[in-house]
Image 1 (tube, helix red, strand yellow):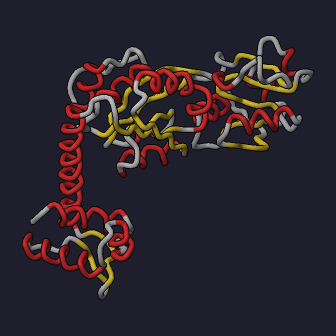
Image 2 (cartoon, one colour):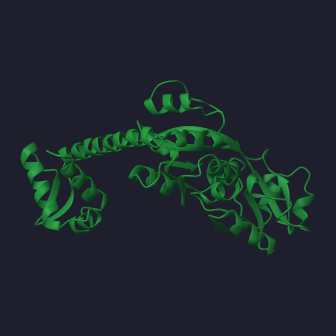
Image 3 (cartoon, helix red, strand yellow):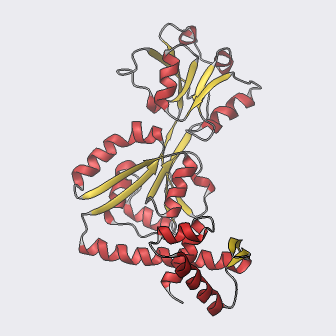
Length: 313
């Protein structure tokens, strides 16, 4: 048994049991991958993959356990490499962050600027996607940390670190009647066509919950994954928008007005997601603390290791 065989098992499973695709990703041949998997199965005395003819179609029951162990071993090997990198070159490397559009556009710029100034030799990568996509990027190793509001809590493989709470506002063209509503109510919002986030994004579940709780069904005419898109169509007069408050800028958004709606919806919590038992370079801890100052290195280490208390907000 060797690490190469475990890596082959992992890549084949990751590529939907397509041995050719796994071989391409590993820069090797399909027969070589198949042979090494067979050798591992012979040594273990069990079949890792279920087969239909010559095709791999899934994992056997013992194969699921083998894959779980292989993932853990490969992750630990990667952690060992990072330990060496950490002490041989503390201030250079790569940091890959997976996040949603709202975080990337409205929250992260100042954090990224401060980080780049402190660690100019670190290559920073920013990947955008839905909350589930950014979590999957961390699970696959494509990203080091995920930053999102939704979905992170659904992944047991990720440690959740609460960063900050936020709420929503209602936006409309400057002369729209809703901007005169005092107080703003859900009933008033429900009178108008609504433009807001896609159901998988930016705390949409809290919006739905509020309306359902009042027995209301708003007329949602357009949904988007991008706050800027919502603002564009609101400015065109297609409806009133329900927006993350952080995404409204009175200096830049001159065509639309805003009313605070935090009294109408439950607040949402943006979290960082990190693989359990991951080894993080020193500059990763620094980035996390820049983003959420209450998350000290000691707190993050305790959370990753499975000890300590919830760092809270």
